[in-house]
Amino acid sequence: MTCTHAVTVSQPWATAIVRGPKRVENRTWDCTGPFPRWVGIPAGKALDEDAADLVNAWTRGVGDWPMPEQMLGAWVDGPASLADYPRGCLIGAAEVLGVRDVAAATSVNAKRWAFG
Image (tube, rainbow, N blue to C red; front, side):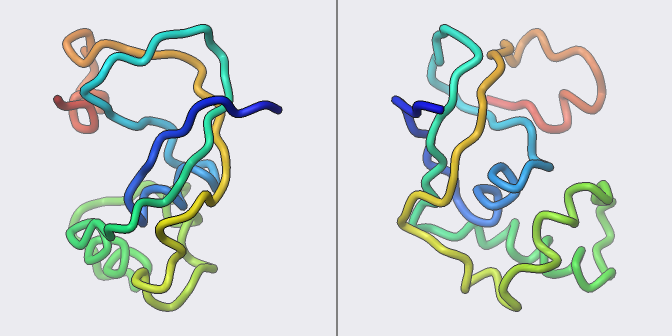
């Protein structure tokens, strides 16, 4: 595996990408091929505070927005506090299989996640 590019992602989403359950990442800039290709996943220095609150609620079983079971597995064995997740460093890699245009998202589930 050779990584020649990197995509910085805020925690807790960087961990979810590296561990596998988060399979989509939205970007506003054009990402051209060739695909598939491996990219490094640095965790940004910032913590997505809104996401951190949601993840903390989901892992305690009190979230009122449904989270797919496979996503919960990304965080259940991690640090007790999302503030303790690594930030400002490379935490892993992910394989980019392709790019989809946000405007082409047609399913309800795709529109839920795709914006920009």
